[in-house]
Image (cartoon, rainbow, N blue to C red; front, side, top):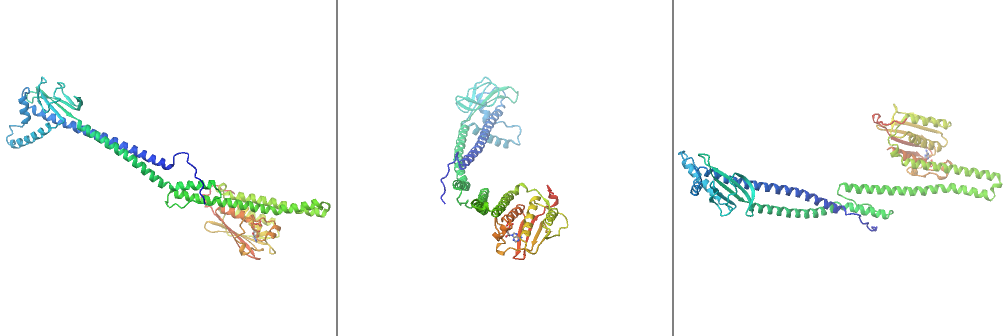
Length: 503
Ligand code: ADP
């Protein structure tokens, strides 16, 4: 089958939308992640640097505080070289000296950091000691906690610590520390650069991956769309969705679509068949009436006998046509019943007894019996009028196709969850090969004879349609020239489930 030309989409395809959505999502997630990583790393590094300078300045201040009076160049040098020890503690002296040496080593290495500019001043602000030759002008003669400042185009932590003598609590000088943050800025910039590169890579990768994955997962959807498009352009085409083995919603969709398609095609076929059957059925009475009218037109109207006969015959055909139209209407209503009447119920005994009594009155020459095996009333899941219509169709046939033995036996019983009614006659019977066809529309075993009896061949198809709408069944058993039994099974509704009882 030629696939009709594909119709263009009005907007971007789902694949593109999916790819864009997934990359946008990854972009947002990654950006949040990057911002958090960046912020917390920066804060951590800054805190570490601050601690570093504070510790160094505090340590230097501690050593210088051992001086008794105003700091001098030599005093500062001495104090920094030989840290404070408790000189009276002789027992610990050795340990203390060793400890001090180690401390001294530590101190020296800390003071030797290239990023650190540490200077010591006396109370007048005169420089006494410096670790480097730059940034050694005392910014102010007051305590300054570590703050970020720019001195000579360099940004770093500035800290000023006044030194007090331990002995007399007098201010004896100042320490100024400046810790250059250039390496921190380097690290920060590198981190930013890496995060941006990673973000771009993840964006590209997620777009590509999103595109590949969505193309893969949405492939069946494209096939479904193309199939639908083909059917739209060529409703007569016989194509189906190919099987999808992904076992997901799309596979389900394809299956549902195929089922729908089959049902629709069956329905269209039935409709076509129906229209064909109807026109075929109507042709005969129309032809008969036409024949009679022609006859009358030519010479019959002069002859009262022919006139009478032709009028009678035409009237007969019109009655037949009327009943045919009524039955066709019934059939089409029966086909739409399932949604409308799905909640309706009826009382089994009540309806059966009523129809049984009516038939006894209508056909007094028939021996109609009812064998009731139901211990008590049962509620059936069928609309009362439809149940009645069903019984009338079968009983009508039983009477209509009876021959010499004018008897009809009805029996009602139940199984666990089904009501059963059997209607038996002792008439002409149905040949075995016709048994499975009698429920088809317009099917009559003996066309000529059925015509005489007024049958259109629609009764049983209405009955079958009705009973199946209510999830019931109907079947027939027959022996030719002996009789026929029709059995109908209808689901019983449990009493506590009955919503709406139609009695
Ligand atoms: P009709 O209007 O012709 O009776 P139905 O659909 O009711 O149409 O029945 C279809 C055909 O089945 C009938 O034409 C008849 O040949 C056969 N049939 C139905 N019921 C019986 C019966 N009780 N005994 C013998 N034949 C029957």
